[in-house]
Length: 70
Image (cartoon, rainbow, N blue to C red; front, side, top):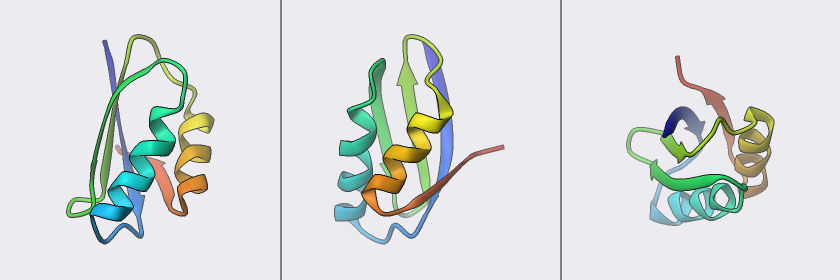
């Protein structure tokens, strides 16, 4: 299992969390998604590494910006 964390800017509520989660869950290979507007974090679980560009594009589609957490 591969777990990756991203920071997401602009989320303020549960609706924001749902919007991001719904887009990221569409990425092939993603098995679980956790999103927190309070912490600004997006956690992704997958069976193999997910292309970072796919994640950034999905978050952008939801209307937010993301970056890989360090």
